Length: 507
Ligand SMILES: *[C@@H]1O[C@H](CO)[C@@H](O)[C@H](O)[C@H]1NC(C)=O
Ligand SMILES: *[C@@H]1O[C@H](CO)[C@@H](O)[C@H](O)[C@H]1NC(C)=O
Ligand SMILES: *[C@@H]1O[C@H](CO)[C@@H](O)[C@H](O)[C@H]1NC(C)=O
Ligand SMILES: *[C@@H]1O[C@H](CO)[C@@H](O)[C@H](O)[C@H]1NC(C)=O
Ligand SMILES: *[C@@H]1O[C@H](CO)[C@@H](O)[C@H](O)[C@H]1NC(C)=O
Image 1 (cartoon, rainbow, N blue to C red):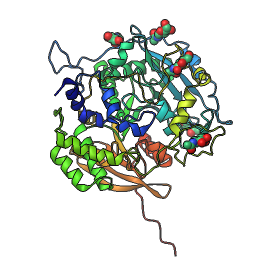
Image 2 (tube, rainbow, N blue to C red):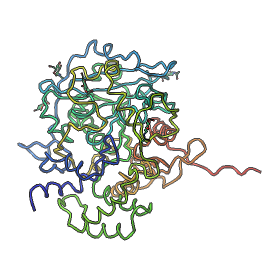
Image 3 (cartoon, rainbow, N blue to C red):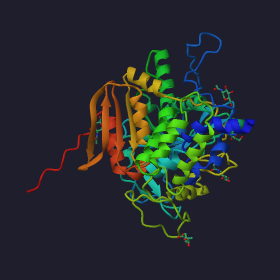
Image 4 (cartoon, rainbow, N blue to C red):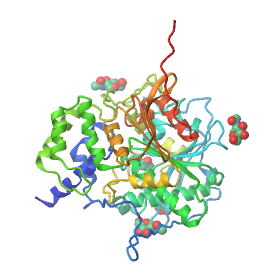
């Protein structure tokens, strides 16, 4: 076997767990794309997420220290007057700009921050991260999921999202790591050296500097949220924050909890669960799923799969080619052209082509100018998922020990799952959480919003909640905006999702 082959195969397990939503989500399962993503990684380090002290005791963690720069006056410069094409009569305080995360390298992260129109001084601060690796929180989080606006089919105007999470939190969207969206590095070799650890350090540097720029948020209750591969980023950043607080013996950042959706958290169960989902949703034969479980070995240290396993997974993926695996019941985008006049749009009607509208919108010079983005005139386009990043150095096979750490430290931990996603499906998430063997506090029950079942939930001792969102794909708030808003509201308020009761019998 050639070296090239073994590199490809050793990522076989890993790359399937990665969301590569790209411009065209269907391409995400394309083996070539995946091979390309990892072509510069020799072997991603899959050891547990921990900052090892090479010299001294292996068990002592040496926390990364970051530079804090003077941010005086920067907040006012970042104020966005209004976004081009923004609907009239929506007054919001929005900010956008760069925070330098590493001065020597010339690395800066772009953020977009929207304060709540309701009660910004008392509502919490919520950071949202998308995954990939390489996908933008502007592309998905802000413009397609939980932000105040969504782009229309003309690629120039925006419409209002009445289910935006800004009604319950001040929401901070971050493009991370360097090379994603508008975030960049002047040391272009950084684009090849990304990985979970560097991302966590840079995210931490971003946050502490951002809080210098917005000091009124320093003591505010802080939560971290995200989906997909952010199932790694969210806990890893939380771990760094928690460790710094402990080391300092005081609260540097007032972290209260984390919430992750359709999240990559444990490679082995994440992988096996996909085939259970495909078979139970009649997308592949039961025999194929059974054979995959027999011939493939998804355990953490297995670097290569045998040829039977590869052949079987190819059968499974060929059945998936004509559907959107990120939401198996929704249509594909068949014509991504912009329209001269915007089509009628509503947050309640998911438009599978909306990614192309966002792409057109954010690539306009006028929009970038208004948002204080791309101030250094980058040589590449803004993209929903980065083509600039190629290579990923480290990715632990599990983040479950981190979830346990948060529970032991009294943080709120919620894990949710849109139940029509085949990328990181509910079957995977259920098995991942089951592997923690937590005592059940309130067993599986339907939760309600607006007199309907919003999904199902289970609550465990130690304050971990697992909740499904019924009829939602991978990007939960895109598909079920009302249910997603109810979910985040209960999470932030620390209240249990209400039990759905049968409708009262009418006489
Ligand atoms: C800045 O980034 C470079 C890599 O580009 C790294 O070698 C260096 O340690 C980083 N500095 C800090 C303070 O993190
Ligand atoms: C990157 O380089 C440009 C051009 O020299 C400079 O304006 C910018 O401040 C640099 N970015 C950082 C984060 O140092
Ligand atoms: C905003 O929050 C503060 C502090 O919790 C509270 O006193 C005030 O009544 C709230 N205002 C509104 C309009 O909800
Ligand atoms: C795609 O949509 C555009 C804009 O509505 C339209 O002009 C074009 O004819 C469509 N193309 C196809 C192949 O349907
Ligand atoms: C930045 O601006 C330049 C034009 O000045 C443009 O060519 C490039 O696509 C833009 N890049 C991003 C990431 O927005």
